Image 1 (tube, rainbow over the protein chains, first blue to last red):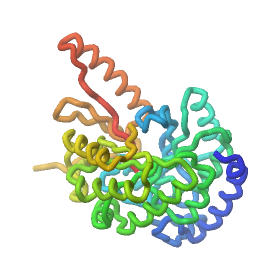
Image 2 (image 1 turned 135 degrees about the vertical axis):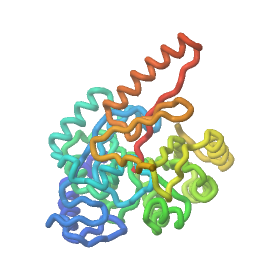
Image 3 (image 1 turned 90 degrees about the vertical axis):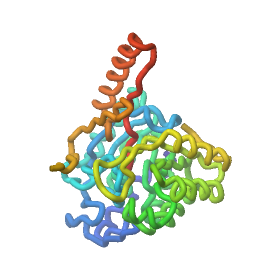
Length: 276
Length: 64
């Protein structure tokens, strides 16, 4: 974290907290009063909740071992979400005490965690509590903002200097799939703008989960966009898609290894900087 | 009569055995990761004794 930004984290948290009286942290702009206990699309009021923390070796190699802290609540409805239950029943998650969590983070660092990985759900909907948390952790902590990047300009600005690495999920390659799979037809324009902005202030890894039967409609446009608009960006292609148990929006099959190979070839042909 | 697939609730753990024999831990927590690691070691040891090849198991990456 940038020391100056770190020293401002509590102040930034207060600014965000005030804005929760009419929430517009994400493009859905629900306008609910979260301070009064109202909840909008993301399902969380002003109380920041977490449901899991763990050290994980399965993130991208430069991040591992990574201390993941999962926050409940999300502004997307991905048809293949693997933690959906925590986003739909957010009150099952525990309220976060920043000082207690900072103690856990310090312990995980001593145990060998190289990065602090903030994810969810979508961490942007809990950014006020996350700022309180970051104010309480050591300034030398390497912060990974592991996000769907679907958030407002305000959030993008608030994060500057605090997020060292943006692990940016770029899930779909066209508005039709974005609406069908994620429930957000404006997803691409918002997320792409936030990724480009993040590149100006931090290190960015663009992650794309390869979706079975979506190589031409989602993977290819995603890779083409990276090649033309974000050349040199680190790209992570994930082949560990898990189909949901039911539903008619998301693919119900696992990824064929041949499709993963094809995806890697496509990225290679475009000269992208693919990382593992 | 076909029953509806079970939907996970907060706190549930889900493990799938795939057709090809791999074991997938869905949205794993720390305990599941450790179980996966132990199973991998045990399965690998057993498989090595039998064929000399190591089977695969793994955990899914979280998805937001």
